[in-house]
Length: 312
Image 1 (cartoon, helix red, strand yellow):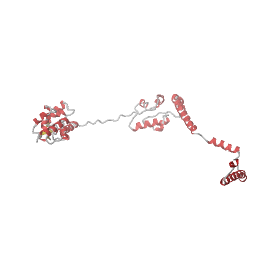
Image 2: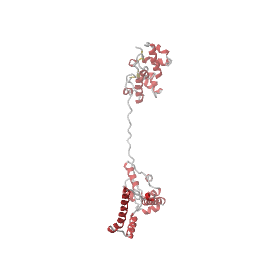
Image 3: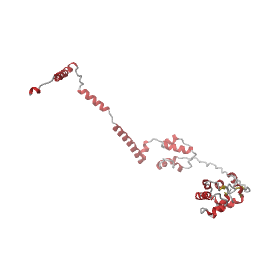
Image 4: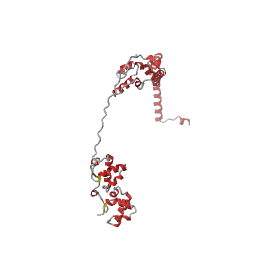
């Protein structure tokens, strides 16, 4: 039985021989290669010294950011100290005091007096726009000048007398109204309407708009329906207005659509719809009395609409 255990076929024996041969070749190569290709080992101390030198040249982003913040904080703290102790900041700046006129001195002169460049720029802009310092107190109102700084400069301010500019008062001529001009509310344009005293641009546009929405004026009294018409204005306008009823544009009741009826100022949508349905059911309408059966129209509505409807 043990003979069967150690029995190998021809193919297995060849495989074993090849495997053993490979193992022997690898072992020989492992020993022989270092003899033919010796390794060049770098001295350990030289490598470590290079690593240390490289580390010293590295600066992390965090350290740079921290340094920037520290510098910014130091600058702000210094500004805060100067604000809290203006006397100490005063000694850090070199400036001289001399007599000056704030209306004529240039920006370099303001800087020599100890003012910051933005203050000098504000003063020049104010002067370029026509501004003048008439008293020393006016100079204290310049943006950025502290009370202590103004108190320091006040003895040196010498303002020459500033003459007040002459203002020529121009009296606008009164608009000439032609009160003897009569206008027809159904034909006059806005230019002609404005010739009447009491009719301004707003009233003139309102008259034209009302004429367009109704088809024309049936009476001068309809001016009361204009927005903003006051009784005193109406009394002033009325004597110079007339109405030509022949120019009224009437609606043809038997052919007009719902939209055309509803476009009239005195007819709402429900009234226009009811009138249209009455015409469809009854046929051709002949007179105003045919509309009395419609509950949507009151007697007052029919009286207002009578001049605007045509039963042709």
